Structures are given as C-alpha cells and as structure tokens.
Length: 506
Image 1 (cartoon, rainbow, N blue to C red):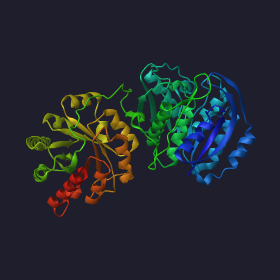
Image 2: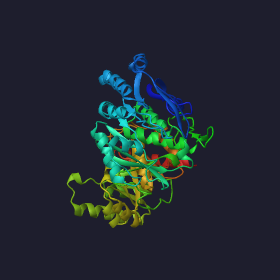
Image 3: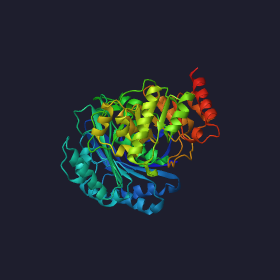
Image 4: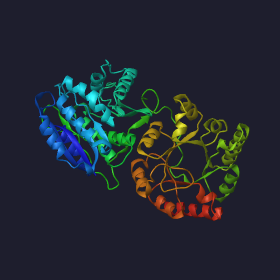
C-alpha cells in the first residue's frame, strides 16, 4: 500500500519532511510531489517559491496510480497549483483513493502560504474532491469567512458545516488554538452522519512543536490507506500526534521542537493510554468524565455468561459463576411489568449469592432494583444524556460498555466506565457484527494499553480453547452466549470455562 504526499518542503521539519517521517514511523510506502520550496523558521518565513504547474503535472503524471491507497495534500501556494491538483484527482475518477487535505494557508510564523485566489479555488474545486479537510481554527475562520473567537463553540460548529456545504465529505477542526487556556484541547469532527468532540491533554511545549498539522493529516491518510474507516483513522491519528508532541525534542534555536514518534509494535500503531483521545457526542466538549462510576472490586471478572432469563441465572450461579449479564429484549412482546419483575428477581437473587449482575440496556430498572451494574452498547449510549449518566453513577450502579473499534473505545474511555468489553474477538453467529474480528493480537493490544486500568471483557466466538489463550494473554474476563446456553451439556461447558480461568490465575 502506498500514500501519495503532495505539498511543500520545509528544511526545518514541517511539510513533506514531516509527512515522510510519519510514513516511515508506520512502515508505509509513499510517493511525494513537491508543490513549493519554502525557507521558514519558527518565528519567520524567509522565502517561498511555488513550482510552475507544468512541473507539478509532470511529477503527478510520473506516478502509477494503481497502487495508491490514500492521498494527503498540504501546501499548494496558489490557484494554478490548486487547479492542477484538482485536475489530477478528477482524472482518477472512481479510482481516486481517500483524500486528506491539510489546508495550509499560512505558516506558524505568520507568512501567507496560499494566495487569496488559491483559497477561493480550494473552496470551489478541491473541497468537493476530498474525504477530510483538517483546518485549525484560524484556517477555518479564513475558509468560512466567519469571525471565530477562542471560546465560541457554536460558531465553530457553524463554520465546519459551511465547509461541508462547500463539498467536503468530512471536517476535522484541530483544537490547538481553541479554548487555549484550558488543560485540554478539543478537536471537532463532522461528517454527513454524526458530529463529535475528541479531547486530550495539552502537553508542555506543544505550541512550539513544528509540523504537527502535517503529522496529523498524514497519519489520517495512513490509517485510511490501511483500510480503516474515517472516524477510526482520526482517532488513531490524534493519538499518534499527541505522542509526537509529548515526546518532542529540541531542534535548532528559538525553542523550536520536532515531534518524536516511537517505533510501532508488530501489532500496529504505537499507541499509549495517556495519548488516546476521549470521544464525546454531546453538543459541547466535556472538561472530564460526565460522571464517576463505581469501580469493580476486581479486574478479574472471570467467566461471564450472557443469558436471556432468570432461569439461566439460577442454573449457572450454583456452578460457580460470579459475574453474569441478563439481556432481555422487549421486541419479544414482553410487557413492562414482566420486564421489571424479571430484573427485580435477578437482582435480588444475585445479591443474596454475592454475584455481580449486569443488566443489559434497561438502566433505569437496573438502578431501581439495585443491580450490581448495567451494560450498554454504543447505540444505547446515544439515548443517554449527561444527566442520565450522572443519575446512574450516583445510584451506585457500575457501567460496562461495548467497544468494537478505536473510535468506540475512545467514546467508552470518555465515560471512565467500570469495565470495557472488547469484541468481536472471533467470528460469531450469536449476534450480527459488521466489524472485522480483532483476534488474539487485538486483545493483547488492548491489554497492553488498558489492562492495568480497567477490567477487560473479551466477547465474540469464544470457545474453551480460545478462552484459555485469552486468559493467558492477560484479559480478566471472557463473555459468551451460545458456548454455554446452546451447549449439549451446559454444566460441563461452564465448568470447562471456569477451569480455564483458574488455570490462568495460577
């Protein structure tokens, strides 16, 4: 897989130099097309020179488009360059890969890097061809024509929507200049289906690090080249950018710093928990978790059956099950009275047996009947307000959250839940899953990243052999549906899972 990099050169670490650094850190191949040569430092732009369109087109024509999996565009300089790049993308037609545009309008030192006519051409010709545009708030103001203040959330969202109306499939507004006095930076993402905030800590010296916009956009393009969906690519890129800033090193004089990226592990991206963003779909970015959920008393939740009746709970608890989930679906025609009665019976029984009962979805009833906790999927979270989450936590109810992707994990982490469920680990027929199974390596990745901070539950396609490998990998719990409830001998199946857990703990 190959990424095409289009942009200007910077002898002090930004531009194409930063782009190539990202590709090399991630082990990806690339092609670079130079639009301009710049001479700039942290405090001043000394000179810029935009290449003639004929030279730009010759570079583009020399590249075999067959192997391109993503395109990242940076500095363009003027209108003829914008038109030349737009012509190239249009000529690719349906074979054009995802395009990430970092709209470089001015240098950090203040010098203009795109003419006014170039800016208009970018809006009219290039925006309709891009998958994602990644302006900072200054660039967003110039592109939208709206006056933005550092604290005006609604105006920022309105300006992002304007870029969508100009044709961009998605917009990611980088929040480095937004609410600058707060300890967290907040990026705003908007596409045709959703909007969300991505938040993370501001690191010391962050404003002095060169090339972070290039790093971020190229990281998004790299993740797209690997086949990631856009919001997952954005989450991974933000994590990598945060790492680069946090590990940055001095470069030259004047306090300039360059990002430093760690080598990726064999399993993929070099991620660290402190850099992983928190994703919120609430209208405004949150300064922290919306509620404080009680912790589970152990990270070893063990064998975790998911059942659809109180009868199953009464069958499995005497066999040694200490954590269980009651998943009752109202589509079966169950009345509200019957639903409440079943949850009350299950909660009462599990309390007397000192068993951790998590109720799926029905959080009000779980709270009312004092269940140990509630388990919510991502769609369930869409129906909860900040006040709902605070009510749930204040009632002493623990929260478990399903995750299937980097973006869903970022959303779950924003809530600081009591446990995190990871799935599907393997292919499963118990429930429709549009996600690619994460496999044992995927679980090991999350154990390294989060295992010391949260109980982790692996779910999806787990049998006895796979459970042994998962427990050995460090996951504290495995959940299953059909492996117990549809087994020829549920008692023998349950005991085999319990034996695997005990063996891993020894």
